[in-house]
Image 1: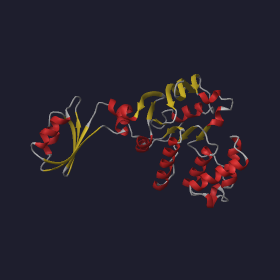
Image 2: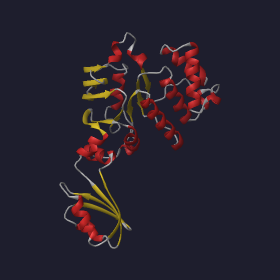
Image 3: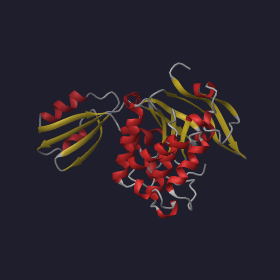
Image 4: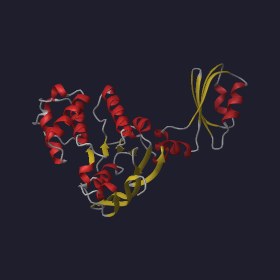
Length: 310
């Protein structure tokens, strides 16, 4: 499998007459963060449940060198489901030790790991609190700690930042970067395109149960073929939208974001603008992941989509 920690090959899953996953294929390379993206209902969660063994594919293959090590494949995985699966009446520390036991992490090792993660998530002082007494954000952090307690090599996270405030979102973002630096492999399913752009080395976009886009973030952005020219200027920029190589222009006060037509030359546009305006700043940018996503699959942006049914 070369440097692939996980390979999903043409997997299919049907519920009654609905084909939730229809031939999805992708690889997750060792020591990387791969973003699994798609509109709600695209098949992301069903795909993850097949990877973790909760569901079996109707056809196709899911392979990992971890499955050949002699230990149960599940024991190598740290899995954070989208929906919380915590026992509300259990105390935080007891719950982590219980979940660690399921992953063969016991005794002093489990206790030390639980304390380390609770302190990292600023929850050590709440170790004797019941799960139901915690905020939704803190419950999410407990579940994330449970996914990491047994030091897994492959970490699969389904919407890990759900329910977190901005401060804790940064905490989790920094945590994931640190895990990657430690050599961990992460598959991150998220509807937060900005977070995916900040974290992921590679992305896989699923639409209506099929893989429609994959590759490194830089490759995907470059492959769109679209560029924008962002300008700050002095003068009247109303003419910018009429320039030959400009497909669209968004003007606000003395700034402009110009979307170039296919084959448009940024230098020609810049020279034409500079002939009539005093240019204070310019930047050539490729489109964001969200722009590419909307262009590729159409419809609503991820953040506005309806709740996922699968």
